[in-house]
Amino acid sequence: MQTSRDDRSVVVLPGATAPPGPAALLALLAEVTDVGLLCGPDGRVRYATDALTACLGLDPAEVVGRDCLQLVHPGDRAGALRSLDSLVRAGVGRRAAFELRLRHLDGSWRWVQGTAVNRLSDPAVDAVVVTLSDVSSRRAAEVALDELAGTDGMTGLPDRATLVSTLEAAHAAGRGDRAAVLVLDLDGLPDVDEAHGRAAEEQVLVTVASRLVRLVDAHGFVARLAGGRFAVLLGDADQHRCAAVAHELLAAARQPVRLGDLAVEVTASVGAAVGPAPDGGALLTAAEAALRRAATTPSRVWLARRRELPAAHRRQELVDDLRRGMRAGELVVHYQPIVRLDDGSPVSAEALVRWAHPSKGLLSPTAFLGAAEDSGAVVELGRRVLLEACAAAATWPEVLGRRRLPVSVNVSPRQLVHGDLVAVVDEALEVTGLPPSALVLEITETAVLGDLQQVVTVLRRLRDRGVGIAADDFGTGYSTLAHAKQLPLTAVKIDRSFVGGLGRDAGDAAIVASLLSLAAALDLECVAEGVETEQQRLVLRTLGCDRAQGFLFCRPIDAAALAARFAEPVSDEVTARGALARARQLRADGASLTTVAAALNSEGRTTSAGRRWSARSVALLLGATR
Ligand code: C2E
Ligand code: CA
Ligand code: CA
Image (cartoon, rainbow, N blue to C red; front, top):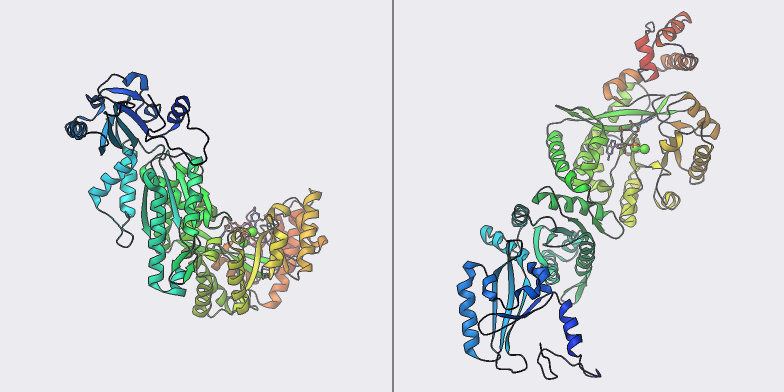
């Protein structure tokens, strides 16, 4: 190829010393990603750039001398020939744009978009100059679009159904392996609506939509899923590129939007997933799960890990089943008493959810909470547990015949960040008549990672009502100390990972001692979790801890069992307490349940109902069927 100073394709910047020589231009051409071809008037290729290999799998040297129309799809060939003819006849400088299919070395057809310019009468060029780029993924999206015509009215973007079918089509055509889905959520949009009205909200949506479209350009397409949620489908991306695009999308969405004299900024998060995925929809499911993680991540971007992808589909099934189970009333709440360490008497009880699954049996929260959290179903789950726990606790003074026993309810990070927790708590207290002082909400440090200020605001409003706030799994977070000071806490619960080593591990004892003194310094109640052995109980007492929860005292039990176990007139309670201490002592000495029962009976002790002890009632007394 010849080049010259006045060649139109050479741009000489003002101030540049010398134009690049032929070798430099060839080096440049070798790096350009669009394909460049020089063809004769008969359509034979005279020169092809290296990008041809990436686009069609062909070696440039192989195509030189061949009729370029041979590469064109039979259905597009006649049109291509007509265009070439008229271009050649029209004379120098004429330009034609085209979009057609070319055969890849592997036999597949690739959609390319390009231009051809007639430079035949320019002696320095003497060719039709053709440039083309691969637009296969965009075409696939468009085809699916044409079929469905599913677009979103406000932004004119494709809708969710279109995105899903495009993904499925790409997957079916074997092009899903390098596809990526990024989901961007303008989580601050409701605030715009509240502060500036619906028109402003729409303006923000339309502006952000057009920014995303500009950014993604020919590399993929943008869909609007719902509300302030958009999805970007990239036809060809790896993890690295996907992360880069995620940050670009976030930056574009966060740029202020002008509304007359106002400039409004909206917060956003991006979740993304890169193929291969088990099916088309799984990529979107995984990206949406990643989005939920993103919302509580400081960078507000989360990329699904590769190993999370195949699981994403199964997770969706679990979530659907859970939603069904919730509607069918399959969630049940068990209660585990929190007791005084000196005499084992209950001071409150923690509500722990279980799922009475029709075919899988009673499921522990670890089996379904992760999926509930990721999918957002945990907000509804939390609301139901709260209502039920408050309703149960409201009956305790009467049922248990003792002074009020507060109830602790676990609150998930999502409920704190996205759910309307204050309204939900207000509703539960009002409906059940439980006084706010009889409710404690347990939160974990993960809840604070997203937006500390927002969490503090929500918790303050709850504290103002008199609701207690306990830091759960205390000591396991990475900035326990800072959070203990910033959050309006009333109690902390020392994680059972530290309690487990008490009596064996001096390090654990040191940690528990420092957590206890931290709690004392901040004037917070302190509960040790997961106490399983007498030895742990003794060490905790020595360290000055006065409240605990664990299998040693009682496993989580349903409301009826709790009532049966703790409903005691005061005088009997004293007797029962004596029996408990004695039973524990005998068990620690290795006595069987039957032996303990016999010993209690021979010592003249009776059950709270005035009956003789049996192995079963001793087991119930000890809170475990060991
Ligand atoms: P958590 O809040 O730390 O609850 C205590 C967990 O420790 C419970 O497990 C309880 O059964 C278990 N546990 C109590 N004493 C002992 C002991 O002595 N030894 C051992 N090894 N374990 C003990 P569970 O019920 O399986 O709950 C697991 C987690 O699920 C809870 O941990 C809590 O984070 C979450 N969870 C439970 N119910 C709810 C709920 O309604 N909403 C939310 N968001 N999370 C919940
Ligand atoms: Ca808890
Ligand atoms: Ca805990």
